[in-house]
Image (cartoon, rainbow, N blue to C red; front, side):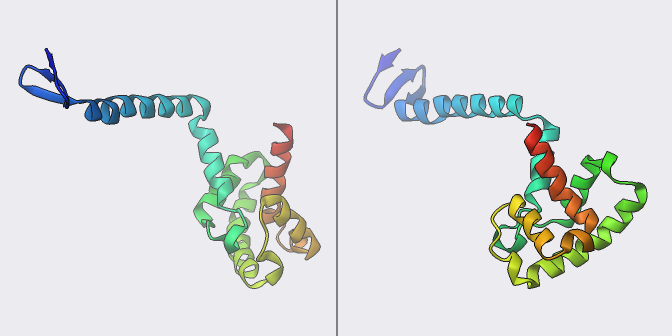
Length: 144
């Protein structure tokens, strides 16, 4: 094996130092970080985080996804009856349209602010099943 300015010559293949550090070492580091992330976050907790992000009020609910918010309710299924699930779908549709046109909800930064504002304007009573979602999220956050 012979060293040169570009790297090492192995038989007829030239491996540069740049290639070694950029591809071999970098890929190993990314793989190790990825594996640690998989160990730290289970699939179910990752799904929960993605669903919670869908009711984040930042930027006028830009991340809102009806299917994921409904999935969030399914993750808390012990809190909802089968009838509640049917009612929740309708509440979510109406609730979102009201959120987007009500200026009181435009500058909210987090789910805690959302829950407070829903109480202030009476949406906790108008949309009790929707209000239950941020309430559950905040409650389970306290337990952590």
